[in-house]
Amino acid sequence: MTTPSGPLSGIRIIDMTSVLMGPFATQILADYGADVIKIESADGDLLRVAGAMRNPKMGSLFLQSNRNKRSVVLDAKTTQGRAVLLKLCESADVFVSNIRPSALGRLGMGYEHVKVHNPGIIYASLVGYGQNGPYKDRPAYDDLIQGISAIPSLVSRAQNSNPQYAPITLADKVAGLSAVHAILAALLCKARTGTGQSVEVPMFEIMSQFVLTDHLGGHGFEPPIGPAGYNRLLSADRRPYQTKDGFISILVYTNEHWRKFLKIIGRPEEFERTPMFNDHAERARNYDEVFRYLANAVKSKTSAEWQAALEEHDIPWAPTHSIEELISDPHLKAVGLLQSIDHPSEGRITMITPPISFSATPASVYRHPPSLGEHTDEVMKEFGIEKPHAAPTPLQGKSKAQTATRDDTFAGVNTH
Image (cartoon, rainbow, N blue to C red; front, side):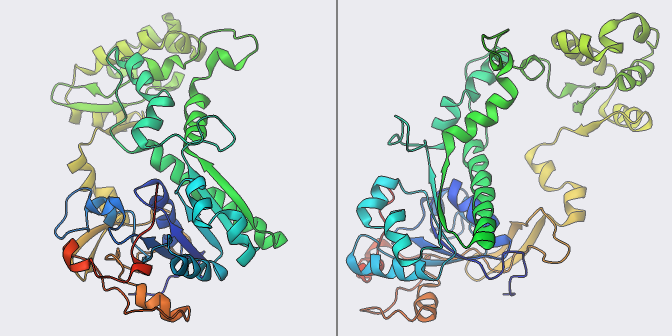
């Protein structure tokens, strides 16, 4: 275990989040050096049981979104548990939660309660919907937010198919990234003014901004001057192109790209006589035809032949990786994005390391993903908190029956 050297070293965060949006955000902050104390129920974060695993409650999705954190098992529903949580918040810079604000209020852990104990705290509330709107109490999960923010509809329009979700937790991670920059902005404000504040990070509004930046289209004018949607992104032939022996991703974008591409396929004369090749505005009006042309032309060569030709003529391209090919990509190996570490219970595991570089204060993997309650004793001692009974031990591999007698004060958090 090494000491964090990242730019947030010395910042303390009380992390009362679960599943992915919140943990993804707080892991980035931990990668940057913040001391993130993860508060968990006796059952643990639900993400602990997601994905491949060697041992109970140490699933692959949990491992990739909770490194560099300390795990404390705590029941905030009891008077003692709430007192402990507020004690932790007294010296924290940030409190972050994706528990519904109404539930936090009932626990006595709303912003108005916490700021009494620490007026300068940054209180980040990660919610499904803005709390001033009619959807404020609706449940929010990645699939639901993708649906309501029109992503499946866009896929349907582009592919002329039934609506489909993006096959990644897109809404959770986009909202998580937004939470990171919101928390950092609030910390910067506090450093300049000394003022703490409450920060609300709503998934639906964030994803709506994410989608509508591309697709507001003619509805960005009043009255609308055309349909919503960006035709380039909605073209059915905007996709990896099939070669003689596989697929390749190609972007023939500028006039010069098109001049060179037409030379490669033996049709240089078409550049001057065809407006959609020599005029960007004309291409923009005819993206369906442009992409169709590319799709047909690319079938003439193998992937290797295209790679050589595109490299020679400086036309943007990339391989169309499978997940397995992505994992073994030589560039990612060279930059060390995937790093092997030894975990005390899981053995040798692969970590996705911080992708952003800092010259003076490097982000790093300095603490393994924690077993459930692994740091409860350590944190209680550090804060000078006496527990009424023995501290809980890590739960990895233990059954419910084995953990049923654990101290109730450190037993569970209501996340609903």
